[in-house]
Amino acid sequence: MKKISTHIDEWFRDIPDSEQKQLIQEEITQNLEEKVYDLVRAGKSEEDATNKAIVEFGDISDIKEELGVIRNKHVIDPRKRFGLHLGFSIWGSCLIIAFFLFINMYYSPNTIWFVYPAFVVAWWPLVMFYKWLGW
Image (cartoon, rainbow, N blue to C red; front, side, top):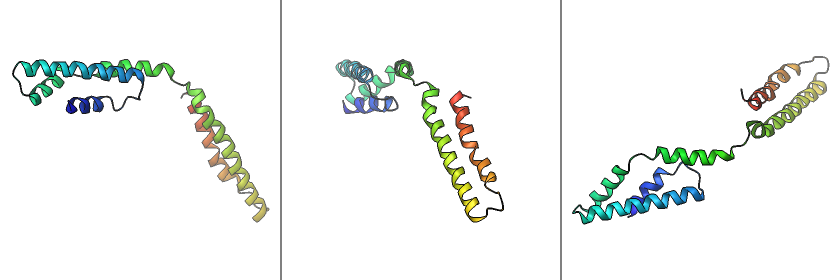
Protein backbone atom coordinates (compact mmCIF):
# COMPACT_ATOMS: atom_id res chain seq x y z
CA MET A 1 0.00 0.00 0.00
CA LYS A 2 2.78 2.38 -0.98
CA LYS A 3 0.29 4.72 -2.68
CA ILE A 4 -1.67 5.19 0.54
CA SER A 5 1.48 5.90 2.57
CA THR A 6 2.69 8.40 -0.01
CA HIS A 7 -0.70 10.12 -0.11
CA ILE A 8 -0.90 10.39 3.68
CA ASP A 9 2.65 11.74 3.88
CA GLU A 10 1.67 14.39 1.34
CA TRP A 11 -1.42 15.31 3.39
CA PHE A 12 0.66 15.82 6.55
CA ARG A 13 3.84 17.32 5.06
CA ASP A 14 3.15 20.85 6.33
CA ILE A 15 2.52 19.74 9.92
CA PRO A 16 5.57 19.52 12.22
CA ASP A 17 6.55 16.06 13.41
CA SER A 18 5.10 14.99 16.71
CA GLU A 19 3.87 11.87 18.44
CA GLN A 20 0.26 12.98 17.92
CA LYS A 21 0.84 13.40 14.17
CA GLN A 22 2.43 9.96 13.89
CA LEU A 23 -0.44 8.29 15.74
CA ILE A 24 -3.05 9.94 13.53
CA GLN A 25 -1.13 9.00 10.37
CA GLU A 26 -0.93 5.37 11.48
CA GLU A 27 -4.64 5.28 12.29
CA ILE A 28 -5.60 6.80 8.93
CA THR A 29 -3.29 4.38 7.12
CA GLN A 30 -4.85 1.42 8.91
CA ASN A 31 -8.40 2.62 8.13
CA LEU A 32 -7.62 3.20 4.46
CA GLU A 33 -5.93 -0.20 4.11
CA GLU A 34 -8.95 -1.91 5.68
CA LYS A 35 -11.22 -0.06 3.25
CA VAL A 36 -9.05 -1.15 0.31
CA TYR A 37 -9.14 -4.81 1.42
CA ASP A 38 -12.94 -4.63 1.75
CA LEU A 39 -13.28 -3.15 -1.72
CA VAL A 40 -10.90 -5.74 -3.21
CA ARG A 41 -12.97 -8.52 -1.62
CA ALA A 42 -16.05 -6.92 -3.17
CA GLY A 43 -14.49 -7.31 -6.64
CA LYS A 44 -12.63 -4.07 -7.38
CA SER A 45 -9.05 -4.01 -8.60
CA GLU A 46 -6.46 -2.96 -6.04
CA GLU A 47 -5.70 0.34 -7.80
CA ASP A 48 -9.40 1.25 -8.11
CA ALA A 49 -9.99 0.27 -4.50
CA THR A 50 -7.06 2.43 -3.34
CA ASN A 51 -8.26 5.45 -5.32
CA LYS A 52 -11.84 5.02 -4.11
CA ALA A 53 -10.74 4.68 -0.46
CA ILE A 54 -8.67 7.87 -0.69
CA VAL A 55 -11.48 9.82 -2.38
CA GLU A 56 -14.10 8.57 0.08
CA PHE A 57 -11.91 9.48 3.03
CA GLY A 58 -12.30 13.10 2.01
CA ASP A 59 -10.60 16.22 3.29
CA ILE A 60 -8.37 16.22 6.36
CA SER A 61 -8.69 19.93 7.15
CA ASP A 62 -10.43 19.13 10.46
CA ILE A 63 -7.57 16.84 11.44
CA LYS A 64 -5.02 19.47 10.47
CA GLU A 65 -6.93 22.05 12.49
CA GLU A 66 -6.92 19.73 15.50
CA LEU A 67 -3.19 19.18 15.16
CA GLY A 68 -2.70 22.94 14.73
CA VAL A 69 -4.58 23.64 17.95
CA ILE A 70 -2.47 21.07 19.75
CA ARG A 71 0.68 22.55 18.22
CA ASN A 72 -0.33 26.14 19.03
CA LYS A 73 -0.57 25.42 22.75
CA HIS A 74 3.16 26.03 22.84
CA VAL A 75 3.14 29.32 20.94
CA ILE A 76 5.82 31.73 22.12
CA ASP A 77 4.71 35.16 23.26
CA PRO A 78 5.44 37.70 20.49
CA ARG A 79 7.21 39.94 22.99
CA LYS A 80 9.66 37.15 23.83
CA ARG A 81 10.06 36.21 20.18
CA PHE A 82 10.85 39.75 19.03
CA GLY A 83 12.67 40.77 22.21
CA LEU A 84 15.93 39.33 20.94
CA HIS A 85 15.46 41.06 17.59
CA LEU A 86 14.72 44.34 19.35
CA GLY A 87 17.86 44.11 21.48
CA PHE A 88 19.96 43.15 18.46
CA SER A 89 18.57 46.05 16.42
CA ILE A 90 19.26 48.55 19.21
CA TRP A 91 22.86 47.41 19.68
CA GLY A 92 23.41 47.08 15.94
CA SER A 93 22.10 50.56 15.17
CA CYS A 94 24.19 52.04 18.02
CA LEU A 95 27.32 50.41 16.58
CA ILE A 96 26.53 51.62 13.06
CA ILE A 97 25.89 55.16 14.29
CA ALA A 98 29.13 55.07 16.31
CA PHE A 99 30.96 53.90 13.16
CA PHE A 100 29.57 56.83 11.15
CA LEU A 101 30.40 59.23 13.99
CA PHE A 102 34.00 57.96 14.03
CA ILE A 103 34.33 58.32 10.25
CA ASN A 104 32.80 61.80 10.39
CA MET A 105 35.09 63.01 13.18
CA TYR A 106 38.19 61.37 11.68
CA TYR A 107 37.86 62.49 8.06
CA SER A 108 35.78 65.69 8.21
CA PRO A 109 35.52 67.07 11.76
CA ASN A 110 34.37 70.49 10.53
CA THR A 111 31.25 69.11 8.81
CA ILE A 112 28.76 67.13 10.82
CA TRP A 113 27.09 64.71 8.40
CA PHE A 114 26.77 61.53 10.50
CA VAL A 115 23.27 62.56 11.66
CA TYR A 116 21.82 61.78 8.22
CA PRO A 117 22.75 58.08 8.14
CA ALA A 118 22.03 57.94 11.90
CA PHE A 119 18.46 59.06 11.21
CA VAL A 120 18.06 56.27 8.63
CA VAL A 121 19.60 53.61 10.88
CA ALA A 122 17.37 54.67 13.80
CA TRP A 123 14.32 53.32 11.92
CA TRP A 124 15.53 49.74 12.35
CA PRO A 125 15.00 49.54 16.15
CA LEU A 126 11.84 51.63 15.83
CA VAL A 127 10.31 49.08 13.45
CA MET A 128 11.40 46.21 15.70
CA PHE A 129 9.84 47.98 18.69
CA TYR A 130 6.48 48.12 16.94
CA LYS A 131 6.78 44.45 15.96
CA TRP A 132 7.55 43.71 19.62
CA LEU A 133 4.38 45.57 20.62
CA GLY A 134 2.43 43.44 18.14
CA TRP A 135 1.33 46.22 15.77
